[in-house]
Image (cartoon, rainbow, N blue to C red):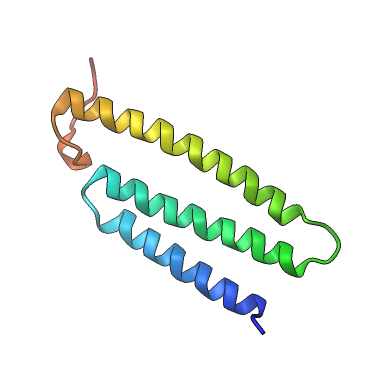
Length: 101
């Protein structure tokens, strides 16, 4: 049987991979992918706690809200990345010194 600890272990591994991706990458899109991995790890935690909570399904509701917010955040981040590329011709965050118009 799969216990709560199994879910938490997988979630911690996903979060660690996402954090590693955010810290080590130079590409803005890869940083965004790392952030998405960390968000997915939190969603997995919510749903796992909801599975083992017999009283209510609040974890699934929170997970659904997190998925909606993550989709909106990705849309906004991609628009920012596309405008950044149009302005400075790179998606390397360290190469953008100033974003003043």
